[in-house]
Image 1: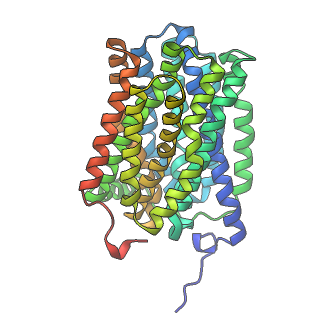
Image 2: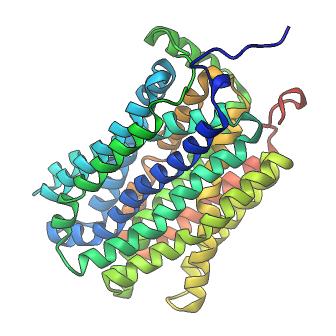
Image 3: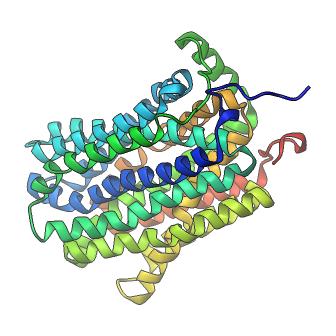
Length: 408
């Protein structure tokens, strides 16, 4: 007997609605990352304005990561339990991103900045489970490509964010720029809600908090999923060190302007615009492992290259190559986790991947700050490279992909 799609279910979504969903999710992810990447251009100015040490900057990154990580479980629960309201979740997440960006701009001391940065990270977190799980369920047969294309939006935002912020810092103070960020965030949040509110996203998968926690415990019994979560932690540990101290190194040790710093940060991410959909497609066609292991290896070697070279053409080329791997890796990890779980808990799997990244890596930027104060800022690139290469080795030698009967 043929299956009849139920109104409001994933199966009932029309081709036109799919055509609206994917670009809206990609554009929203681009703006979210535009805000997030712009923050790293502001970071050296914020550090100088408040007179912070490298250790305090590292601790700020750690607080940011912990706050975002802890928010993953409620974000995943909300996305699975209230899946019919994902358009509201996505729109409100975007508005809160601008609101807490504005709060950073008004902060006058280290403690208030820490609180505002933590809330900023929480707002970012609530986007991922709702957006990625919807794409994972709607485009199940091309999960790797759809999630990677969503990640491409992030790469576009990462490229544009530093450039735009670098230009704005030439016209206004960092405080004024952040204080005004709530306006575009609120406008786009409203647009996301209007575009997606009529698109079905499925029934809620967790009838209660206790049921959600039981489902999460069942997922954590999977050895293969635990390995994917471990890879996510290793990757995020290296990534967080690079993203935290790369701009500080360029601004303080090399002495580049805010505009040049924005160009460097854009260069780090421009490669991911093309590489993400390509790697996502290859992982759908071949296997996640065949793409993930070389990507982790390439990122680890690029981090070591940043330490071994000085500013110049070679340094810029290494930064570009690093961007080729930086964003596709997370998309591959999310698709890998999605392969291992049922459709009803896709948002939970997204939350676990991002949450594990915090559990295993939240303390790494603080360690990087201590290393930078004790030695040089550039030394942290050695730390990042070692972490990522160790993760690549573990991913290469352990069996973590789904059984053939559950493959794509």
